[in-house]
Image (cartoon, rainbow, N blue to C red; front, top):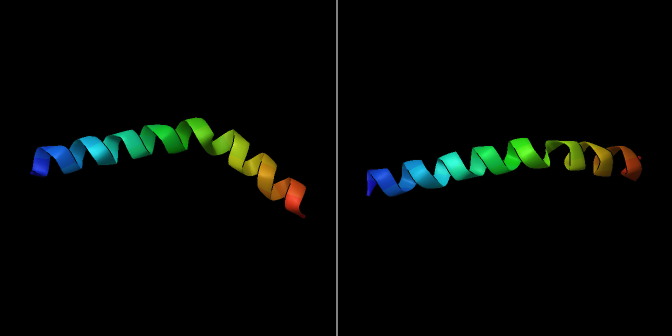
Length: 31
């Protein structure tokens, strides 16, 4: 079970790193 959580956490971190530029653009466009 711990291995599954580690994989999920790793995927989330990678996805956030990849999506960070888009998130910043969305936040700046909001303002």
